[in-house]
Image 1 (tube, helix red, strand yellow):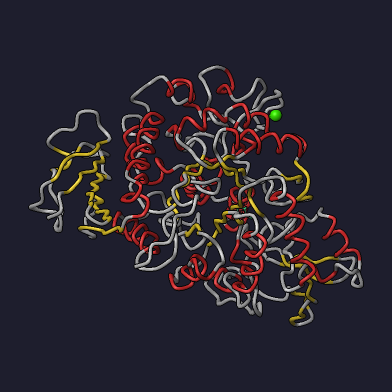
Image 2: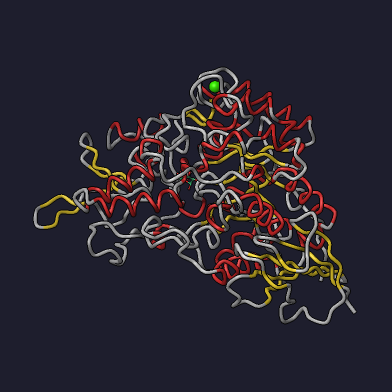
Length: 572
Ligand code: GLC
Ligand code: CA
């Protein structure tokens, strides 16, 4: 096997920042760029190499900045382009790199390109977005197809002025750009990419990257007979021109040695994923697959009940993403949280007061031992958990949550039981849980702001905050720091090694090995609230081994509730 030199982003640990909720510097209740700058030393102290800033561009904020009005400007409450330049310089001065969120599947309907496009059918920018005439069924005006939008409803919006529909896979205020048009693509590269690459950013997390090529836009199969609109993720993702578009985009990025990580939903076929991340294909450096984070979700995400999954499914999802690097030139990612997911402790372990710290350490140990570039989402390092069921629906600010709740209400004529089930699902899975302010201290407003924050801080900030955890050697934060050091020390094994799942069907213990040349580690993770016998799984018996680390200071003869361990195995 030929050994290719490693890229800077492979061993890097990425820390994701959600500007609105990270830190408020000027007392308006909204996080901002100076707030981020003021905590760069904190971020560095965790052991992070790269920061990823969620959209800070000028935006009407219908979808928290994923609706960009101007790529070349900053949302005023967050700061200015100059603040961004300072952030870039200060990040680099600390030996870290910085990537931005590249949101170019769609813009805001207030972007000047769309304003021009919608102004008339003869506008030179008409074709920069996706316009189609209506179809008439029994004389009734209908959208061009039956696709369901990501936030509910049809993906088509009727425009009275020019008497056509435009496509929006997300909110109506987020019209999809037409990637088929070469001028549009060029404008995207210049305005959204090169503007910031020239200012020194080191790469991008590429939003909804597999949706650029829409193919023929045929009707989706009927999977929800009660609805006029049908799930179409397999229609609009991974269309025929994806690879061509990405090659073109990569040619721009390559000039800057920029890193890319693409968001890749609705792609269970590993052959396809590999094509995106294989080094020789020159498309993307890596992607976020949804195998792990989609676990337990219903066909329509919230149509499910909490903990509607079994451990073997979780193991299988991890195995799938780990195997991407095996025997080929692809690369993978390790993540459990981001701004679109609820908190991992609440989802995959237990957020009961007596277990939450153990759960946080267990997931930290697991992630530290998995191959690929690692991503930590703000607050994950503090072991943050979902906010409680008692909070009213008013505390949910995300369109995804509020649209779903309104839809259930409408469909069921306000039925209390249906609404309670919807709320239980939201309490478990809503994106809002990731979007509450970071608890910096036990003082008022969780030390996030001197004013009332735009979202309510979680009730537990007196016991879960950065200040307390920095001085507590048993905190989740201290554990993350330790695990990131260990990962760096054994990077061959943990970042690049081969993953082998043991005892797949075991419903309570997740066991796997990592192997790199003559080194092998065994990872044992107790995913239950009960003590478990310390039994070596089939495949790891009769081997000499030494404990490398546990989530407990003084591990005993059994695996404690939510305890994790790594052993080094002696290879003969
Ligand atoms: C991605 C983002 C999400 C956003 C959507 C539309 O999935 O991560 O937050 O709502 O794209 O841009
Ligand atoms: Ca502010």
